[in-house]
Each structure stands twice: as structure tokens, then as C-alpha cells.
Length: 313
Image (cartoon, rainbow, N blue to C red; front, side, top):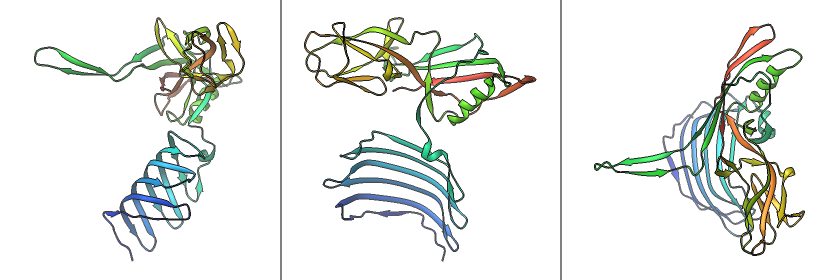
């Protein structure tokens, strides 16, 4: 018989073969169904504390789901954000998963999707010159009656945006329209990130001074400089990295940590000058989930607005 639960709170201790202990489980549900229950909305927030040597320790798991059923279970949309801290098997600082399910089959995007892809934004000849490039900071300002104010800067480094337009995209043998539109579709609009090389900035860095060894520091961040302002690179091509101690190249003893760090097995000795050469890119996403293509002539199209926004590493 159908029933409706407006709110249910459950605190339980459970033990299995892995000696897992559940500290708290909270469930809020609205359920309706005849004869099979149809879950309209489920919101679950869990805290797990897994005792001795199990494969992973989940510090926090938040799941929001909208589901609908007409016989076999059908999930219309599932959005999950998980923070995990692994023990031995894995360590994930953050996992964001967005999946679309239709009927009885999972969307083909789910198992192959790359939410942090390393594809480079295509360079096409129809790009107009009027490109708008804007760095943006976030400052909290609290004014006082005396006229003074307190300011707090939320960003150590800016978020960059680019607005550009394409006066023509050929759809014939050149396939410029298909290239740009296909790139946008594969990124699912603003969901996925990708790499962008700003044509007005030099992205090939040579003999950049990282610092001086102190026999303690083992990790160094690769950065880029814009008119005297230095900020971490959004992404560094690992194949391009060359590391030097006192101008002598080091072919071993260090490793790359994506997206922009190098780590030394043994911290560089006191007084050693560390430099590096590398190629860097901005990591960006599309600013909108929609693009409007206008056909003004046979096999000729235009795209009046494309917005890219940088994503901090």
C-alpha cells in the first residue's frame, strides 16, 4: 500500500566483515507509489567513520537526487559531490560527478567522461580582433560611519574572462564550424574544462627562477608573470618541463604534480639556484551553456559571442 514519509531521521551503528561503523545517517524523503514506490526527491547527507584498515575513509558524502519510475527504475538526473580521503587504496580530494540516466540504460557519457580534460581550444581563422580580456577580483568592503572602510580580498589571484566573436566559420571542406561546435558539444557547455593559449601572452617560459634551495622545501609551483604580476600557471605541459640546479639540467630526482608543481625526491641543498623551462596554458571553461550560430551565406556561419572563463588550479 502506498505511503508518504515526510521526514525520517535514523541514527544507527552497523558492523560488517570490514568492521565498518556508521556514526550518523540522516534521511529526508517524500515517497509515493502504487504498487511500486516512486521516489520524487531524496536528499542524503552522511558521515562515515570506518574503523581499522579498510580501503578508504570517506569524510563527507553529499548526494542529491531526482528520480522517477514507471516500472523499471529510471533516474532522470543524478548529481553527486563527494569529498574522500583515502587510506591505502586511493586518495581523492574531490570528485564531482554529473550523470544523466535515461530509461534502463546509463548515458554513454558517464563511463568515458573527462571532467578535467586536457584538450586545447582550437585556433580558427575567423576570429575577430575585438577581443575583451578581463581580470576579476572579489573584494568585500565594509564602510564605517566615519567614512573609513575595511576591505577584505577574497582572491589572491584573478579570474580571467575572454569575450570573442567569429565573423566567419566555414562549414565546407575546412569544417571550421564543425570543429568549434563539436568542441563545445564535447565539453557539455560550461561543464568540462579545457586548455587555452592566449595568443597575446608568451606561454613558453625559459630558465624561470623558482627559488633557492634550503634543504627543506621539496615542492615548487610553476608560475607565469604578466607585467610584473606573478600567479600560478593553470596547467603546465609535463613533457615540456626542464629543471636545472645552478644551470645544470636535472634529468632525474624530481617528478611532476599536476597541474603546476614539481616535487624533488630530496630537497635541494642550501644555496642551490633552481630554475625551470616549461610551456603553460590557462585552464578554462565556456562561460555559457549555449552558443548561437548564424548562417549568413551558403556554408558560411558566424558566432557573435564566445566567452571563456579561467578555472583556478
